[in-house]
Image (cartoon, rainbow, N blue to C red; front, side, top):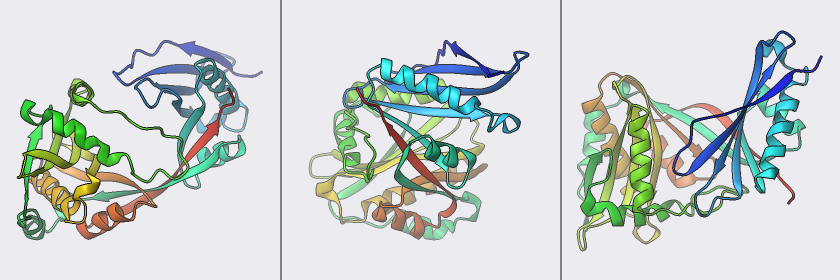
Length: 295
């Protein structure tokens, strides 16, 4: 008997997205799998949605994933989306499932971790304290200070040319409202956002940033959310400088953190060089898949 697929109401919405959800159940109503589709709602990404499917290992290869996928694809088309993306670890059941269901590989990613306890703090501090003509570092917790908000929002275009290979990612449009909303969403779920930024002394504008999100209790793993430098300010070592300062502050403020996690597109050579220089070690590799939805 095929599994039953039940649409669910998912309360997890954000200022930039909302989610659809389905539960797959066996003959006796026992849950055997689930699917979520995140619909991006902000300007520049209204065409895009993101898929997550999970099936209990004992229930795989019995059509559960395929039925969940069918429901997700129908919903994405009904919502007028043209691209459905999903990610899987290389060599995993999810990797094989997506490839067999018509998704195409569009982006290769390397996940890496730095254990703060193993960091040579003196060396990291030396990098963080190097003088940079014209630039200085600043940092804040949570929401960006009002006096930096506009130029910090403007600096988000540093991510516009981040290598995404063939992914139909669109262009994320940032303004002060979105920057503030993102910080508030992180705080609402009980985590802490720490930002280090490079400032141009000539006009006080933010020209680069790196963000780290850590659990509210300062334990477990922190996750790097993004590092970027505006194109016209690249070539001065600002990315390495900011990330070293972020590591130094994390060690100082959250000594019980287990690791600092990051993921980087394999084609993003500059960021990979920064991570290698700072001692990040690869943990696993993943693939971003995309299904093109005809309209």
